[in-house]
Length: 352
Image (tube, rainbow, N blue to C red):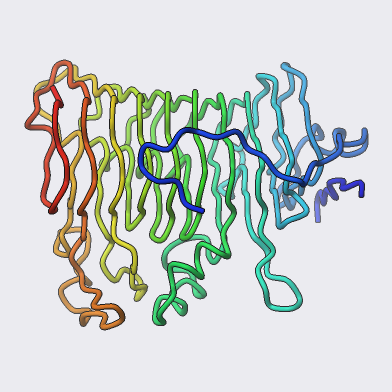
């Protein structure tokens, strides 16, 4: 079956240490026809809806795409979007620049995109991947969190098997790369982040898992937060990346308490942070890696002081940042004291 984009314009979790596997699926998309490519290349109009992609795209190197782009539901599964060095410029809008999302079907079930590849792009803006909700306070996320089985529901509803390869993010958006609740098996590799970020550079939200960040350079400077937030996210691999002068923090593992009335079921556990380089140009900095950075009580989360304990499964407001591995990281210009462990049963070794 040929699956094209219909543009509208103006109107199995990876365990720590698992190898990166190539994206594979029975679903394979066909190349986009000329009218779809023309729609992508057309100048974006104010308040225009995104161009929804369900076919393979190869751009010309000199292209500058100002349209917002979405990959929605299973009809986008198997798509390869290759910018060939071209730019996706979302600087003219406050909305998502690139969005990969599940859709609720007429039968009430979630229609999930899988095995999407986005590569060789310059992205001036952000990329968000979402399923049950666009963030941890979304209505359906909050409702699900009040029942047993929340982690399984969030993961079943979220995109999975996404490959992001050789991307360059620039700009000053809040979170350049955001993985919303339940997102699994995203690989970000050979990519870089420059410019500024008003929040974290990468956010792995609650109930997400099995994601891989390898061989990337994080040179973007957050205004006040850490570079990577692992918030109730488990079994992720962060390996062989370079962090350029992360003075406001490198990688923080925590569980964001009861923010917005949503209970985070999964704790940040089973994560592997190995072989990274944290390059410092100043002697005073916040931790490069902080395991258990909030422990349920912090200046960020006043609601932790007033929300009652969640009784489902014995959940409480502690971070639960346990059974993680932080080894063989290099801290030139810094020192091993920049690795902070406030959890339990974590393996922290050979960081220097």
